[in-house]
Length: 577
Image (tube, rainbow, N blue to C red; front, side, top):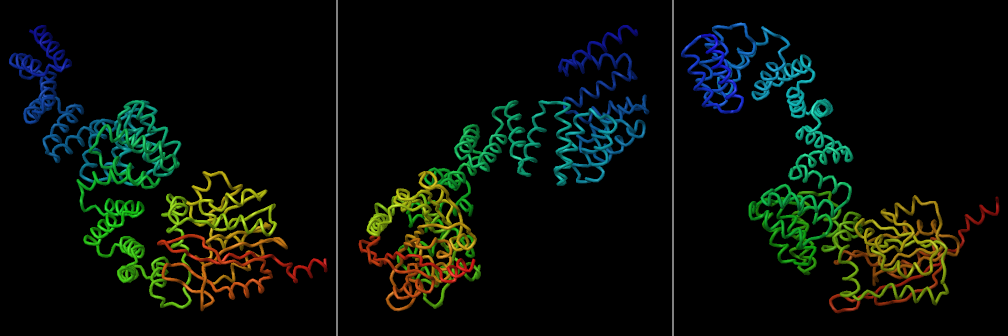
């Protein structure tokens, strides 16, 4: 009889190991018909039923086995698992606790009980039992991993990193541990470590979409635009419905001024979420930058229908209506914007330009920065082909007439993309360009004209600079400055004696200076001349020229060249020395 029972059990067990569960159950039935109280047959029959998802039957067999072996911690752990899957959580907790009473260092029971507490958001007890599990069995991988997830959920990031590192030391190809380690390092901006983790994930699964997306984020943080595009594109090729990949790809195209590409993806995103304000706004900005003003207007108006206090849409609509010369509409949108953000200097500046209510308006650095960052991509083409910008030619001619054929050190104030830098390069041993708009500087840098390019507000740079220059040029810069007294003092302080200061200004007829409705300042020639004398300059040249054409009309500006007279106070000081 014993031999027959052993043979049946061995056969059933083998079938169970081969995942032939129904056949195994049939054999266990035969065995239990012969020996209803066979404890191993009852236990493994219960396990087979549980594997098939038959929890009611599994629990029944576990109960029979426990009646025979009430002190078996493994049986208590197994029936607890079945109760948990059946949704009978109180019973599950009771049996896990009994298993741990019988064996306080039972790592698997600690882990299983912790998972249950974790699911019920009892994080304190979950944390306790996960830690007991890893202390009881330091190489018990599931407990390390689950503890890492709980610590991550609770914001204990350094402790979570330690657990995921433990998992990888136990099992180097644990994909999820590598992934979460990458996420944690990325959150801390540890880009090299994050990249290493995501590359490990991709080494295990080359089509892991989230790892591809996060690798793209790392590339973007490193300003590796094309690499980011490649990662996001690959993720999207694997799952064209992945919103995160498509949104990141569209945002990357926006960041690198590839607006047509961005719009293609935002169109797809808006089909799924037509009221998503982020997608609508970026589409509006892209259309506006491309010069498609009606399309941009449509997007911004859709946003305002959803959120009438969306500040950026209000100011962008104002900018569009300024370009369309509909000043009344522009004023209305600016007033609405300033009700939301009264301290915004850019909106206040544009409103002052249109209404002329403030007689001493302050220039806005934010306005200038945003204007030229948005303009940078098309600046050269627009200036040369549309506005027929001739100022660099005039600068070359007047410097030649004044016999200024060589300058040891030249400073290009408001250098922009370097249109005037081309002329200045020919006569300068060392050429420095200063501009407030980083995207303009990026284009200037690509041209390789300048020895040094600095992103800074002009006045702040001049007031902090200790070096001297022989030539300073401010071409089409003064229209973004009102009162010039601080600028002239600062330029003089940066020029060597007998150095030249060449600049242009739009022409005021009556006032010393004023803000025009086009948001550009103009200055009276008498004001310029008086200021030059006060700041120890001598006027060498003054000429009215046409720097550009706008709306098929010539735009006159005044070109000045000042020479830096020796400062009497500095001369006296040198003589005293």
